[in-house]
Length: 117
Image (tube, rainbow, N blue to C red):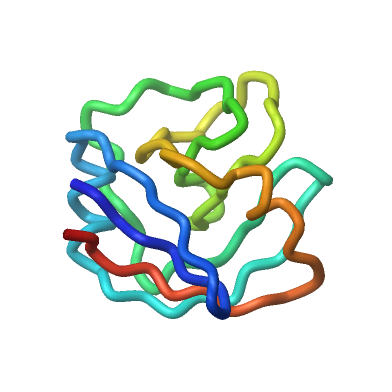
């Protein structure tokens, strides 16, 4: 499934994988979230509902452009830099372009996530 993340007038496209967590995430769309920087490597936001981790590995190493779910905290994490293995991190999908520009958003900012055509 393709999704679009819009910040102001700029849109970023991503593709979700076919996992239980991604399907739960897609079922919550459209979403309006407030994102903020975390650890100089990712933008994060709480989600309104927890996602299923059925069938997900116990953790993963994040790469720049990964759209992920951090199950212990129940938040969405969008990585703009590579990061080591994290227990509880579930990959939802991947940005198809623009992760470099997405990283430039600073402070807290609003993002709208919708299904894309």
